[in-house]
Length: 495
Image (cartoon, rainbow, N blue to C red):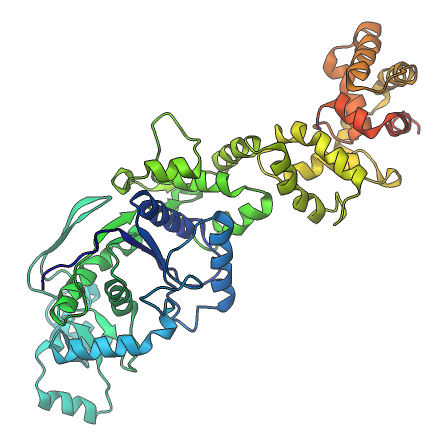
């Protein structure tokens, strides 16, 4: 068949809806999306949900939620529609049965009755490793042999007849890859009960949806020779028009250089959303798991990613997920938000943590807006703002310094500094940050001869409850004279 490949790129993301979205899975989605957008093509989102024992509607909904949160959109697929639907494999059973029948009739598939035990025994009898897998024994069964097997109550699986020549392709990430003839046994495409396997459904869908580029994890690389062989068969029966190009993306590794598993909390995408990663920051970091925009640059926008992304620049080496680096990159994106945007994004975290009510008052909103720029510079993820800001909104009857901070900073030695601070602040006519700063420096540094850390740490802990807080003087201005002085007095030893 003459190849009739689309002029434009058609990439796809085709996850199975099992468990919660994994950062490695979403990295694959991101690379396919960036590749399609960079090349002015389309991204097809297809859901491989034929495993009823593992797939769930809850996981499917979580996938949609994850992609929407990150802004990874698709041109065809669930909710978007498209001319090659349906886009859920559970709704495509008739298509697979029809294609399998065509392949069987054309001799591309054949009925195989051998059990695993029989295959292993034949391998042993031949002096071979029984773990070598299927030995292609059933390729040339006669009709009489097939009838005899059926008379025993056996039902056949359908296997693809692999070609007798080497199979190779130019991998977009790994270069030329070759599998020698005879090293890949004839694979099962359809179970004995008629259920199609991934080895059939995935290439059939890619063929019918005219996918031009298959970018997927390197764990699927061993199945590629089978898929290429099946594409040849699909072309011969008029189902496929061309063989797509393949690129196998590197593993995402966790701690100890082990592949990041779904059971590892570090792999759960929603853990990062819950902690307050912003989509721009997490996308930036995920893009670095196997790709870079430049040798000396780690921070970039989504638009810059799309403009620069080339699949041939993806590394074949495993990429390690480094939470600290992810947080650092996210912090850069948090700091680049406009102040109004930061306030809007951080507010839900403050509400969830009980720092603010669901409907903040005008006074609370004004305080948050005023202090937001100071907090924005200090957080890597949005949830960190909760502990930094709690002191500003807590009811005075419930305010108390953190125990560890109080033990460290509010012991008997702190009394001279606290009394001097109270005396200096009581005499202020203006309660502005600059005046508070000058009064405290005059009283504690100049007056008592204390070093700044020794002078201001007791005041900071007394007023904010923590050793780490937003800038002290601005915090005290927002708290107001009465609240600030009240907290300082209550912090005096013996109170």
